[in-house]
Picture 1 (cartoon, rainbow, N blue to C red):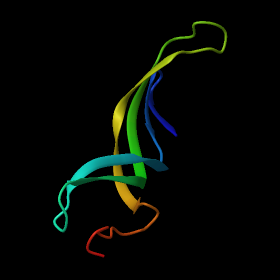
Picture 2 (cartoon, rainbow, N blue to C red; picture 1 turned 30 degrees about the vertical axis):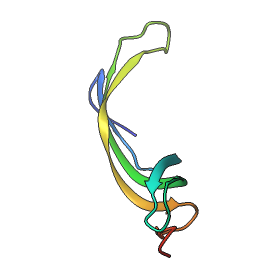
Picture 3 (cartoon, rainbow, N blue to C red; picture 1 turned 45 degrees about the vertical axis):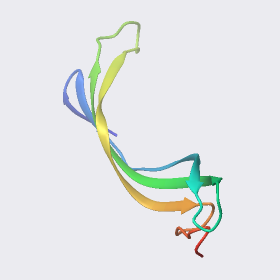
Length: 95
C-alpha cells in the first residue's frame, strides 16, 4: 500500500505472513556409546512481517508508464517454529 508524500515519492507498507525453512544436519557426540551420530532436522518457521520502504518514482518513460526504485527494510516476528513436524523440540537421545 503506497502513501504518497510527493509527486514521485511514497512510503510503502503492508502485513505479510511469511514461511521459511530448510534442513540442518550436524554431527553429535553420543555419551552412551563411542563415536558420533549424524543428526538431520527439518525446520519450518512462520513470521509475521511488517515492511516499511520508500519508493522513488521516475517521470513517465512512456505513456502511462513509470519506473520506480524501492528501498527499505522490514520487522519480522516469529509466530510458529516446527522442528521435524513438532511444535516443540524433543531431545532425540534423552526423550
